[in-house]
Amino acid sequence: MFIQNKYSKTYYSIIDNAKQLDRDKKGNERHHILPKSLGGNDCKDNLVNLTPREHYICHLLLTKFTVGVARQKMSYALHRLTNKKNEVIRSSKMYEIIRREHSAMLTLKQTGVSYRDRCGKSHAHPISEYQKEQIRKANKNRVITKETREKISKSQKQRKIDRPESFAKAPMTEEHKRNISKAALGKGEKITFIHKEHGIFVGTNYDLIRAFPAIFDKPWHGPEIWKLANGLYKTCKGWKVLSN
Image (cartoon, rainbow, N blue to C red):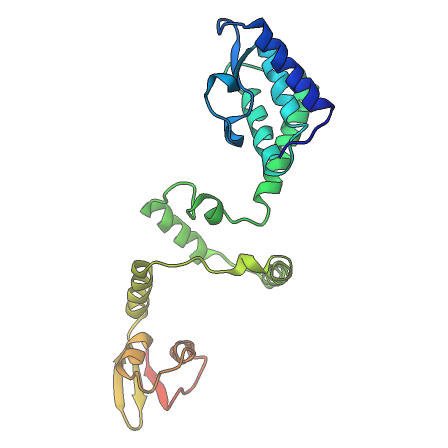
């Protein structure tokens, strides 16, 4: 977590000097010698009053003698310190360095991690029914060209090579599964099917599957019946479309 170098020596030199001066809080800022995010606490031995300038320098130094996750946390702490409301960093060059360092640490932390894994949810904010309806309408009217399909296909194939773990499906709750099943079984227009042994059947393609589970007992039978209902197949397991 920590490494010994010239920055760590300077850091503890500032801390020791501040402790000898025994400053009060007025006009100064409270600093955790071992940051709380790295395991520090609020005990008296871990606290010291620093001038605003010393406080800033100490947080800058902490990013120079920490490694790994500790460095990411110290980079974030420095970024927060230099972006307080109504306060500005005095050196534009130093501000640029801090922002770049913070951006690099975020990239390192988040690369290859989905938003769901990082935050425990699929969206930053709940999506209203109105928003869902607008998304459905937009997707329904969207025209995807052949060129776009080829680009998507190429991108997905490369993603499967680079990040195969990203294709892992998020676990679904039982309620989610029931809702999907309920929606699937009720969708589609009623169609008139005919079979030489079973006669005429009127209903959606999903109704047909439910009515004859012994015939349509394989996972791929659902897509085959869908193709039959949409005119892509002439027959499927002896069934034909009489009208729709």
